[in-house]
Length: 198
Image 1 (tube, rainbow, N blue to C red):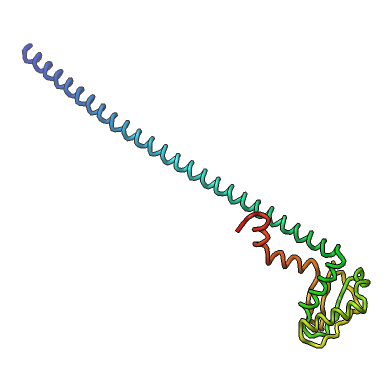
Image 2 (cartoon, one colour):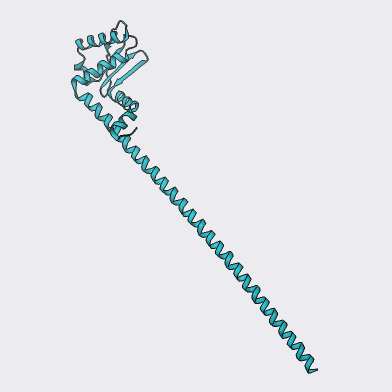
């Protein structure tokens, strides 16, 4: 009986050793599979994180560039606005240039030839009878009409320049409106001259 039980114990021991070896191999294989999967996940997570970072950086840089472009454009527009203000000051400050401005406003704005000219109180001394006669001649030549423009009995603060009125029709030939309209119309050309832009 001793031999049989020794043999059974020996076989059981061998079987236990084989099972232990097999489980150890399986455990090692599973560990290798998990490590590979973990490494793959780690690489994938690092790649995703890098892509997220790069995308966010591009978005931030793009937003910053757009903000800078907006600020530069606002600065340029402010310079153009200041240029328009300065042009208006130059027109108002030079008596001959100011009279020429009024003449051009009359020539451009006359529609019926019988408009009244609305001016500021400060411009009353410019509008002598000779100057009004000259304005009527210029208006007649420009419009081809018989012109009898006259000063309005009322004055308004035009800020320089005139209004031409005929009933409800009102033509604004004030310095500020004219200079701002010209600056807006010529904005791209002025920008090209000042800032070297196309």
